[in-house]
Length: 127
Image (cartoon, rainbow, N blue to C red):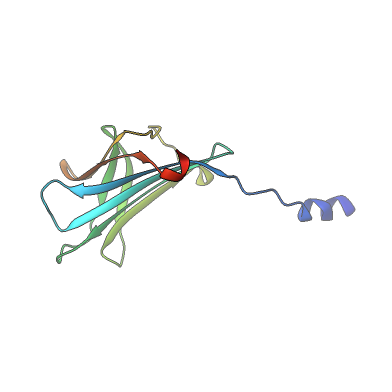
């Protein structure tokens, strides 16, 4: 019983973020939308990839896809706030077929049409 109680009380420190990449996603055509993508790597080799597109000027959120270096990696789903968003995480057992890196091209597509583009940059606090 004592060992069981000790195991309940032993707290492991949260993994520390070791890398954060960010991409500001802008339209080539001046369309009423913008977005961002973020990749975080942690000290326990865990990771998270998130992306969000905000719609403006009456444009409605819709299903989109996030592409990294020419490969589709993440489905973005519409929400109730005129945004399409998505997330992958190693904690949930998600797979990522491309390892994000600084300078990597990021795009958001609606079918074959590219709506937003950007480049992953290292967050200043990790330089």
